Structure formats: C-alpha cells, structure tokens
Image 1 (cartoon, rainbow, N blue to C red):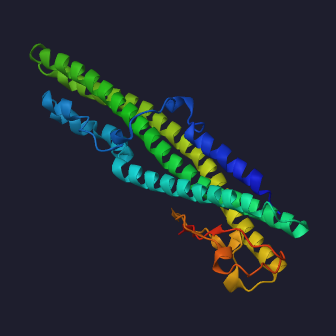
Image 2 (cartoon, rainbow, N blue to C red):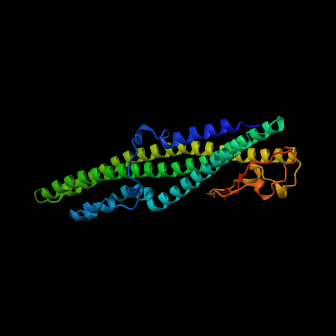
Image 3 (cartoon, rainbow, N blue to C red):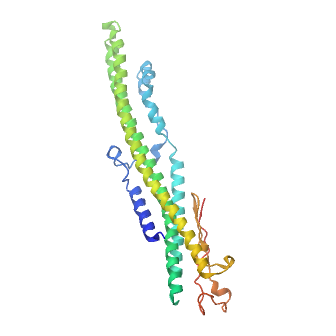
Length: 305
C-alpha cells in the first residue's frame, strides 16, 4: 500500500517548488510582476501614429499581436486562485482536526486491532491533508503562471516601445531630409523601419519561447500534483474498504474516519462539525473494542468536483 506520509511529503515539496518559481528559467527570472498588469494595455504603436507616421504603423502592426495574445483577466485569475487556496487550507484543517480527535481519544485502546485502527486513521488523515495540499499547489500554480505571463507581457511591451522609439527617430530624420532629397530619404527609411520592427520581432519571439518552456516546466509540476491527488484518493478508498472489512459493521453506522471523508473533482469544501457517538448511548459499546467507544470523528465531507 502507498505510504501516505511520503505521498503528503512529495506534494508539499512540489507545492514549494511551484511557489518558489523553480520552474521559471533565467529568461523570465524574478517574475514578481503584479498580477494586475496581466490586463489590457494601451496600444504600444499609438506613439507612431501620434508622431504623424501612421503609414508606418500598419507596416509594423505584427509587433503588437504577441502582446495581445499575452493579455488576460487578472481578476479572474486572482479569484480562482484564492478560491482554490482557501478550499485547500480548509481541507488541511479538517485533517488536522481529525488527528487531534483520533489520537487522544483512542489513547486508552489496547490490542492489535486498536493499533491497526490508529494506523489507518493516521494514514487517512495524511490523505485528506494531501487533497488539501493539492488544492493549494494548484492555486499557487495559477497565481505563479499569471505573474510570469504578466512579466513576459511587460518585457514584450518594453521591446515594442524600444522599436517604436527607434522608428520614430529614423522617420523624423527622413522627413527632415525629404525636401533636400525630393522624398528619397522617406522611401529609403520605410524598409529600414520595417527591418527594425523585424529585428525586435525576433527578440519578442525569443521571450515567447522562454515562456513556453517555463509553461512546460510548470505543467510537469501540475502533472505531479494531479498524480499525487489521484494516489491519495485511491489510498483513501483502500483504507475505507479495509476498515469496513475488519470491523464487519454495517455501513449505515460506520463512524470510522474513512467514511467521513471523500475527495473528487477540482473544488474543495469542508465544515468542522463533530459528533460524539459515545454521547448518543452511554451503554453502547463498540463491538470491536469491548467496553470502549470509538472517538468522535469529523462529520465533514470534503467534496472535490
């Protein structure tokens, strides 16, 4: 059976790698750009038109297309990220609550069955926390990806501004010499302006290549998270089945931790109400532990849809 502790540790390590931007290469390093810069930006070629070189604007319009492709909705990214992280933290809190309940409240139990029950409870708590950790990791990935794209957008915008600045200088000089050259200077400057735009277009393409490479690196981490989540849910199912098989109890009265938690899908929710089975009937002993009672267990249901 999969080691729940190792599974949880691996997910925490992956989450840390996502949060630390270990997946970001040097080309876009230091991606601390504010997420709100991911939104729409002013027309980077507007300065050309304002300077009176509108005919050049249309010839170098290809420069702004990559910038438009990088634009996104920062509010949407932020909202989804906060939602996933909050859900993940709540699920992790449920796991900790269960540990606090299952440990002390079974301290008086004896025998191999009691030890087995504690072990299963501990593993189940690890799995529930792993589900929460997966949610946190996905939230960090969404936020990190948004910031790195915003960083790329900022750098691409800077390259376009440099290109526009050089083109304006070139065309200003060409127009200044137009009368003396009978317009020949303008005719000569136009292909030079396009050449400047093409040169900067190559630099922009390199930035986009770095962004794609970083995206692949992040995708590998996300794949690791989803695999860990799948392993955690499978292990919880096995633990639940093992608990039911060992107790031989009817599933309608199963207060084992495995019956109180489930995880599936992409969103998480949890509440923290408790039930103390021993309070319901002080004379109802647990058939598996004569003279003893099961500990109270969270009634929380972790949904991941």
